[in-house]
Image (tube, rainbow, N blue to C red; front, side, top):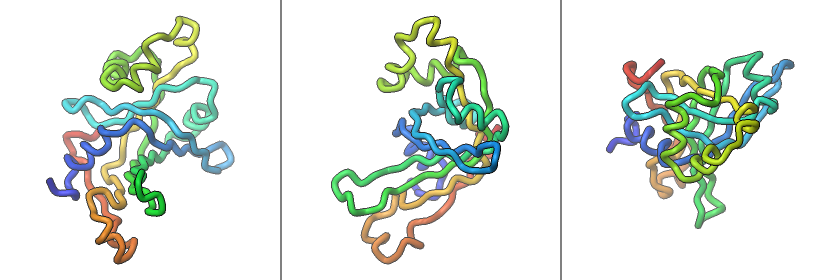
Amino acid sequence: MNKHQFSFIEKEIRGKTFGILNTIDQDGFPHTSGVLYGVSKPSSKFAIYIITSIKYRKIKNIKKNLNVSFIIPFPHHYLRFVPSNTITINGKAELSSFDNGEVLEVFMEKRILRLITEHLSKEEKKELVTIKIKPDPKILCFGIGISMWKLRKGHIEGGYSVIIPKEKLH
């Protein structure tokens, strides 16, 4: 499978559950949060889903500015001195209620995500909201699917982008 194809990158994104959400506060400064995420069903339009508390700063920021950036790190667990590979998705955030059927289905597919949602009380559920990231067409990648030997030649070798097919965009 060609690393420059969306299908390859989509598979890599679906294989992870941790990412870094970047929002912009009211003064224009970035705010960064580590989050667990799920991905829309393969038959649906491509989107990233995050379930979080309405109390957090990222929600306040999104209410003021829908522009977000989402980074998925791919650390090298054995060669810790090698920089992580990354996938960066820029797009617009959309807030919705926690009890979104599709989102809950997505979160039931992976054990770690299921643990977040399975045993919540009614009170806890009231404080949760779903962030849906609708991506821009271009996904930025670094090092994904590229051998370390090639990356040794220079960091420029590792950067590329893929385009999400129109039928998968919102």
